[in-house]
Length: 309
Image: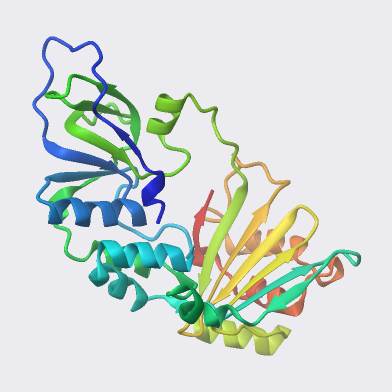
């Protein structure tokens, strides 16, 4: 859940502007992802007023799936058994892990024992789609969310005056909160300002989710199979694929292209023909890709692409 890796600001006393705005909330949380939503629940339960600042312009699908370790679920249960149940109701339990390399001299393996995780570790390994964010949002009022607010920098004041947040969109006025908790991940502006991090390089990754009917038809036509609860990794030359069979028969699959230009437009604004040409060239049978991966490629349309980073 990344709760323990969030960054907190608001206690160090720096120079105080002459007219610091009055705080609009006790706590400002950066990011409406899993950690940010859980933090909002917990803080509200403890009587704190909260505002969530999210760079997206609305609460919509982002990414394809999140893989959660049993220890993350154990931590969530300790925070809120109710939130853990809401999440488990929409997740897929992972029981099998497979890793395939296309190079002849590289190792491949398969583990069928992940289903024992709940007995051994107290909770299962799970994969959760966009449904997770919707489940974690239940119970949080709309007025908590400030969409279209991508944090650019913050300014700390004295303990009584809190932290002022400045956003990338100049049309969004600064907001002041008593404390700032950044749950936005490793690319957060808070982290960069607080720790002086260099910009973290991006890899070109694309995330797609395919419905069960199309997955079944594609496997029938091309070959291979997708099994609910199986998490698979396939590694090629500068190109890797992750597949996850979901409990409803659908499949999440993502590709990471180490050779692609991360700034180039990809798929969302392209035509089906452009998508076919690009994926067809990458995942041709002659390149050694297994039929299961080629079936998913064949079934994917631009509308299935949830996010490209």
